[in-house]
Length: 90
Length: 162
Image 1 (cartoon, helix red, strand yellow):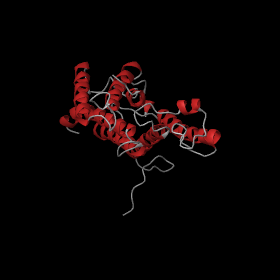
Image 2: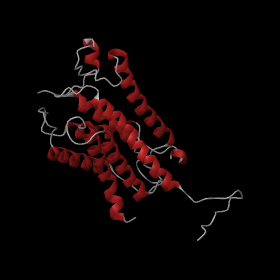
Image 3: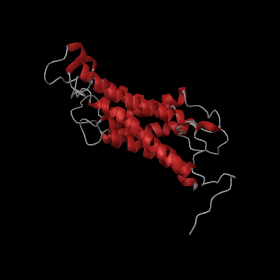
Image 4: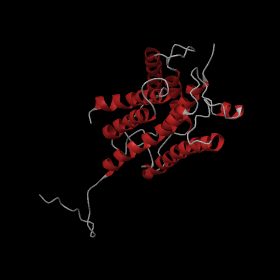
């Protein structure tokens, strides 16, 4: 099976950049558990399947950039996007 | 904002972000591109900022982050353009495709985009433009949301004259 590295790498990079900015404020009432993130991931996979690959792409029946973006978002969130450091984040 | 919106918007924003990334990556082969995809990602951020407020928004764009991304996007665009000027004599010459056959093969390999179409520098330019647009549009909305009124020299709010 052929994998086209272009959309996978660039999609992961863009997703990682956005994911590193997901920082939940501990004082906020907003609480998304790991279960909700897994649900979002499954929903993203379903969406990628229905979007389908770009024209001429015959590697996988998914939108590979879409999937690598959601993976990048979660990797960015886990590695860099834990908590808000202070109120000057904005 | 209502609880339903607060439950729905953050997961939706993540999916919309992925759609924006997909739009950026398909710019050379399908309708879309850097500006459109960047605007979609900025839309996802704006969604969160409006519903949760700037302080509680789970996606936080700091001033330093936006400055860095804007600079990286602009510099990447200029770098790719100047590379064409250096190796082929034309600004923004597509080094990855090399239609005129005037570039050494290793340069062509470096700027090649690994997908079935081999579009050269176009997807990289889309990436750079996407970064610039997503932070640019977000910065506008952050400025509007953070505006707290006009104050005079004594610190008192200036009232509107009708």
